[in-house]
Image (cartoon, rainbow, N blue to C red; front, side, top):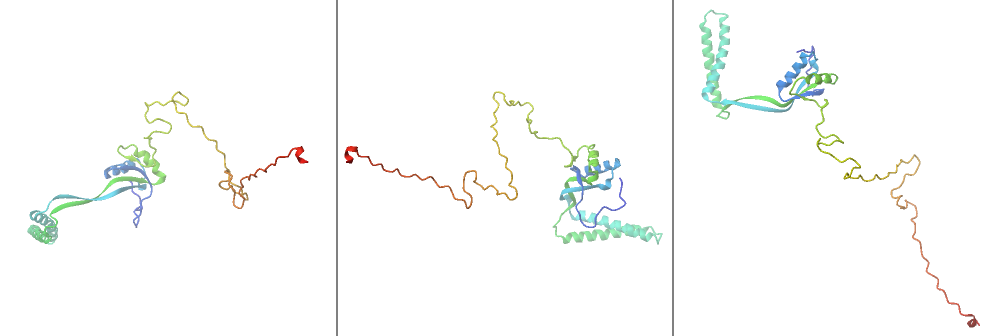
Length: 251
């Protein structure tokens, strides 16, 4: 794999920059993807592996007893005794010093381990190993080379393309039936639903500068502010008509 002459690790915690070109379920798959890019002469110094949804996993390896504590303590002390014995052999030709250093170191390691375990009071009677595990590993690349990296990673199976990659539509396309075997009546055929007639719409234009904007309710005939409302028509009562006397009665 190629390395950059300048360290890309920032001095302060900073989020990585770039586009997601692929996602993998395990770290080994993400590592294999970066190695594949390196084999294709891709500038891998532009690539970053980001683990998301981090979890601390502690796997219990066994039960802790005095015998196991004593054996573990003797082994760690014996390794320290070997180191001390080799230092003594540089100044002396006696090979027994090495054997004595191993026994003394193992004895002290056994003694201290048992004493420390006794002080715990049995609060942790098991051994375990802790790891930081991510549920998903994303491979990021700088924007100028993201398209090339995405094209090369398509050769590896098992990866999920990033959001920038074109994907085949999985849902029904507008204007097409989701079921290919289904048949739909054509417009105008017998039994086809008749669409409602489209209502004519009058284009409305915004008022120009200096022009009075249309007031709401003007179409219904409502008076505007300061305008006198139309009064209902008044009906005059009919004038009573007096009968005209005959001519012989006028005299």
